[in-house]
Amino acid sequence: MNQKLFRYPIIIFLAVLYISTSCQSTSVPVSSADFDGEQAYSYAETLMDFGPRIPESSASANTAEYIRAELEQYGWQVDFQPFNHAGVEMNNLFAYQNSDAPDVIIGAHYDTRQISDQESDPALQALPVPGANDGTSGTAVLMELARALQGYDSRVWLVFFDGEDQGRINDWEWSIGAQYFADNLVRTPKAVVVIDMIGDKDLDIYREKQSDQALCDQIWNSADQLGLSTNFINQEKYAMLDDHLPFIKLGIPSCLLIDFDYPYWHTQSDTLENISAQSLDTVGDVLLHWLQNN
Image (tube, rainbow, N blue to C red; front, side):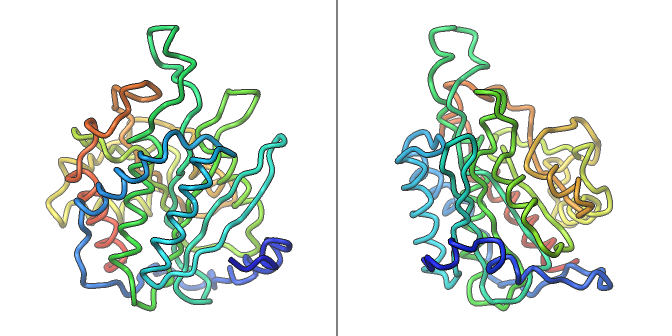
């Protein structure tokens, strides 16, 4: 890790975020390797072994180091973006393969919620959420995307956000990490895709109401071309507070992929047996197809 980078995190590392707004295509060359849902699930298992990834916890720090080490094996450069919110030290991570500014940012949050406030039993509400779907599934997909994209001159950044899932605790807002990242952009990418809660065994991803519709059209078209329209349902259903909103507010085309019809959201039952490798594979395949064809 370049320590100088983090003494001056915004001026130096985000100075490369220059992208010409005159070019409309987000197409990037991608690997011919398939996305492997089983490998993504294996990443999820390891991530869960760290325990609840509450900001500033040892589990959070160990997870960040694990992500960095794994992606560097695949030839990515991984940097930390440290920040402090309300006295809590946190880290976003961003990964890239060259010094070019990215055409596309694909992001997910890796933190897990520190209370299970959707539990009906008050005795369970104070326990941290395990976060197999909410925090782990998106992180695992990004890690497997890094493997599938390795060795190619890709203008894609993979960004792992901290502090997404602590909203309405200690007067915090949602998406603290994504907001910090977006606030400190000096140039805008062409597209941002955020994935969250995409591991549900019964995968139903509806179009999110606040997302950029043209960008979502591309992604849903990719799903249709792959025969996955039963999982990517071409109807709007929810308006979500999530990591895409800070970018939307900046006018950056952004799309949230989320299956919010997940019965174990913010409960003790958000565990590995309630997500599947097949769902992770479905989302990864769609993202790779979209990157290759748009």
